[in-house]
Image (cartoon, rainbow, N blue to C red; front, side, top):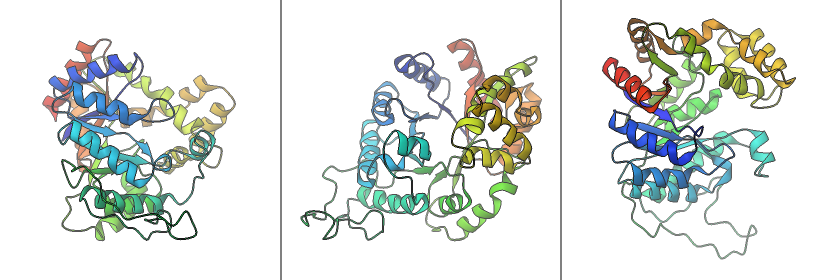
Length: 345
């Protein structure tokens, strides 16, 4: 089971990149580079390629609406070349508030778009002359939708790999099913190892049933806050503000995918209450309203035996790679946390 973490911007990107280089020496396998609505992820991934030697560099995630499929393929191939074959293309939808508010692009047909993007990216990496007849990304652009001068092309440069891993941050049932059928990996959010099956099990089974048998089994990247040792239980609450942000405020009322997932775990009343508090500006109260049972059951913080049991639950639920946040007041502390986790894994 490989171990990954998300790049943190708390101390600035350059310091964060240096920390990733040091964590790599302690055994880190993957770094996920987010792209909400701050700096773009691809330029940072290129910088990380130069600062590291072994760690996989994953976009975590690129919103599908902000780039054409061909540009997504080109960007992934570029990072893959700079890192000598260590790129992962992580894709997701973001949400209507960001896509339509910040980018000015309609938030529509996410399942169709992701399917077409996967098909086009793999054609680009194989250096095929790219044509596509999908409803969202017809290539070349058909007559009547442009100058009529569009020409089928293939990528000029030669990618290091002709099949770069594609990981999808999927939440809705149809999207998860498609991810299990077509993608190389799945990046769920708020993953609960003992309740995830009830939420996504049917969708995963349907998708895997129509998966190309020539592709590797689907990787599942999940985890949580990590701290191994006695007397660390108070650290579990460090994740509350982030959970409250997503469950309560990342989306409008009635259109918050994260709130829907939280409710599906049996916390329907709590999910509504957290959202009410957050949207009314009572963010600390929203964080405090997150059930302690959820915090305990989705973190890897506690004595070694507790963490070992949690790891077994993640493994049994189908998780193949961890995506975690490391507890520690200093880089050395976080390196030691990673080393302890590596020993348990």
